Image (cartoon, rainbow over the protein chains, first blue to last red):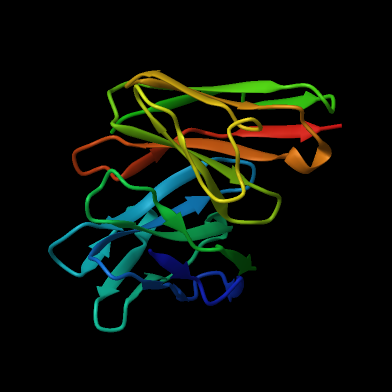
Length: 114
Length: 114
């Protein structure tokens, strides 16, 4: 079975400052990894995903994440945040056979301070 | 990437009644998944909807409360039966839509039971 731990439930950060949202996973098999964003009162939107290849993955809105297999981590980063980045961010994992369920972390609420 | 249309987007229902949520995908998907997101929380998988067979339910969810239909590879419904205020949540459907797109989610149904 797979599990996902998002270490921070809330992260406050000043506008234009860098941010890192942490995600660790546990799995006995190889996995695919995802970050989703949920803006207030909206559905889920895929930010980025790691399926294979380069461990540094670039997504939409200037976000990137690095897959670290030895540390079983997939931390999300952005060099300079904007007020519009205020949202809930979910890390998720699924086994590599693709047709299996996706497991979500508890989410990290990103607060952008003016 | 594929698009999943989910409806209704929101509803307010009386306790004891039932609501059926529909998800339509613009391409075929092998499996669809139904999630619940309670206020301020992450997504919890309710069940996996398999075409041509009964849905597979996660621990804590039962078919009598959340019957699911999957008549073909582009459509699924979830019914929330005999509702109580504790069922007030956002319900989302998802599917692996193939290629390099990861999972796609519907926009969610915000249910309030009064």
